[in-house]
Length: 591
Image 1 (cartoon, rainbow, N blue to C red):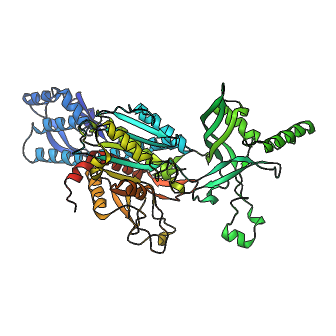
Image 2: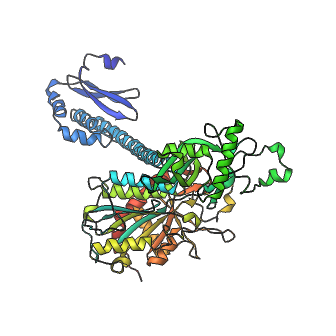
């Protein structure tokens, strides 16, 4: 523009952020008055008397701290100063027009800045969850990743069989069998008379195929196959034709004489379960996609592990003798090719491996598909991540969302094993494990569970069924939670979920304080209703409970789908439980 080429525009460049570009606003070396607007730029400045040049100088002397603070609100501070200085040189309608136009533009910029800030926070939450779930694959690995993050956040590990010496402000966690975990932060002002125990809890397991103790099968079609058990209620047809890896634990013989558990994770694709070609199926088989879970779900161990090359007669004789010996002992019988890979991952020799606890897993890394999250084990690694991450954030008193130092509660994140098969185990929610941990922790702090039970609360987090666009009739018409529209409160009149009306409303109030959107789910009367850990813990401990979850598609599939907005919302609700529940509870009058 010839206007910017004028000799009047020489110095005092101001930059203001406008969307993704940098708009350069040049102030002249002499004072200017407002004249006719430039096309697309609004009012422009024209020469004025030099006596008013001092007005510009005041802009340059604005405090640096104030300008820095304005930048955190979208970079409007310097632009504000420039326009005010220019308006000070004129009067009347032209000054009002200049200030009005700038104000409208500032509002637009701040709205855009707010939208982009939300997107950045959401992307950061999703990136963190994807990093978390990418390191899992078995309940033990979910706990392992949780421990690593808790230690990084300053939490200390406790041992169940040792004395606990806890103190207000302390950060702790304890595990059971490496597959269940309870982390807790003692409020800096913890009071048994004013506070309670606030728990965000999920589960560490997901439906999967598990390697059997004697998984070696007779060779068919020149392949090495594995015998597997179906764990939980999986959508097993989704496991066909997917590259599969392994994760879990192995038992090894250690020196000089003893047993040791080791973690292993083989994320490289090692197995496939091939489908049968459509040309080889009957018409009925094509329609039903029926398969036998015992004979048709046998994974093929692929190269470089497996080999279809025939063994020499000498090797075959030795191999047959070894197999005969193995048939007579009580140890595991696994394919040599698998043991070699597992031993390498565990850092031991194959002959040291005595038994395995291995889950097959989708070897394709989790990823974003637009605004959606595509990942294995969303149910229920997502809830474990949200609870652990929220607790770590709440415990960080330097954070803007901190508050542990002023809390009167014990804030907890818990995740239990075996939910997918009923939770009835030593490490499941339907055991005495949480009650034992609570008694031990509260005893160390000089009180008991009965003293705080009435002021305690459980947010039971497990994924919810989002409305499927191709199967909308499967949802009750008035309760159709949408992906991307917030956390779901799950209610069931037959107590398959522990939610009650007053408790659900309290959770809505907690969410409202941090703008967490809330949805509702009720199952149709002609459909079965699932359940989760909420009713179990609620009945065992006499604990007020609400069942919630992020909505998702394809629950119990080998690969599931959730929305990025709901990933963030679930974490914010867990964080809100620790921050805001006490105030909501104190302001609620219950019968």
